Image (tube, rainbow over the protein chains, first blue to last red):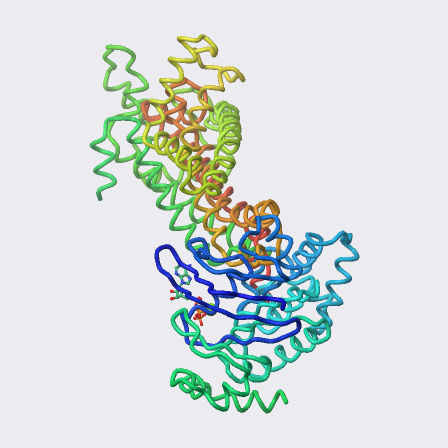
Length: 263
Length: 354
Ligand SMILES: Nc1ncnc2c1ncn2[C@@H]1O[C@H](COP(=O)(O)OP(=O)(O)OP(=O)(O)O)[C@@H](O)[C@H]1O
Ligand SMILES: [Mg+2]
């Protein structure tokens, strides 16, 4: 068992937002979290990474990663864990980068924060990783600022950075929802490919059940901070138990297209 | 015309000075905002801006001329009357004619302009020397004071503001904000007097008598200015750093496991500098005009004190020269700030090409 979340509750200030969330994930497994906006998907995965917004606090439960309870981690332990064994891809990777520094500078800084590579080695490794994410002309991308890249390119950069240290767990928060359908499919495909190669487990948060179906072994449906339904993805898709899940399934018309594209 | 009425009614020289300053500030702000859209400076844009500067200078000098023209008091009487002496009318008229003050407004202005075109800013009535020379006399004092106080201010405000932001709503933050609130609410001339009283008179650590530019005489006025600016800047730095700490890229950096130290020094602070640089430019412009109140309190021989005296004496050419200097500098500094801003912010630097 790589990750095991038991009875997790998270509050923002006084408000209890996430309640009694249980989930577990094996090495190399893929779990998708779906649910309407505001249902607490982001909150759950940010709790796993230990970077909840300021007012957010875990108020109950346990998050066990590799047999260790993360909630007892010190700041230094979080720092060592984040970006190496666990990494996150955000919805808009471009805005998660410093706007006044080049991609290359930031990639190298990240690599050097967790390894003893020198600048030149780090730059070469970063360029190689960008190429692995199918970014055309990676040397050029290294010299660019985030605002100079398209959404899809930024997203690829975000995935490349997140997967650089071959993390055991990748947390992806709607990694493709800002992209157009074709780009979406490409980025998801490339991300999955690298994760399979490196044996990385994934928790993906998505609105797009097509993406969930393509990627995930298991789907978890959330609503207002609770789990509504949970099970193997084929079961959830073919035989949804709750009306809420049925609605979610109907609400995404482009599932079919992405589905076919990907297979 | 509230401005003119205001000037006419206002007998207090500080006040006139303030009105002039206000008027200019207003004018320059409009100008500044107009230009904000074109911050990335290419060669022809630089030329365009320089041309705009010249036009603005025309406006500023014309306005100043107008203001001095309609303001009460007669420079000739001020010039000739020493004590209670009664000066004969003929002599007043003769001097007026000699100074060209009997000519219509536009002729006076044109004459001044043509002088300026030949590099001649006219003669100061009160100092009895060329205006340019008088300005150069006041310049070292003002520049030295501006530089010293600015450095003192930054040494306090930058660490203070950062600390305050990092310990937001905790002890250090409350302490620093308390101090800055205290500082903001005290008028600077009063702070100056208190400092003079305590360090000059009671403790005897600094000389009280001013009049010359030396390091030991500069400490107190510079400290006063630094306090006045520092209290405001501490808040600005705090706001800017807090703003940056709330940005997404900080979350991103934390998620990548970067140490807080490097998030702060490499990412948050450089980003927080950008809005502060604009502000700093305005402050430098303000300082180089000579801060009259401080210079008066400490009888510091700078441009501010000179300007107040010039207004008191209705020394029109000197006032005009002073205003010209301040305007040129203000705009020059702002141009420089915009250039550096464009240099520091890749978004603006590259904005035009993408
Ligand atoms: N910083 C915050 N402070 C207070 N409440 C917050 C904060 N962030 C999120 N919330 C609340 O927590 C709840 C869950 O938010 P969360 O972002 O986890 O939802 P989500 O499922 O990711 O939604 P979306 O699909 O729109 O991203 C929402 O009701 C939101 O109002
Ligand atoms: Mg979300």
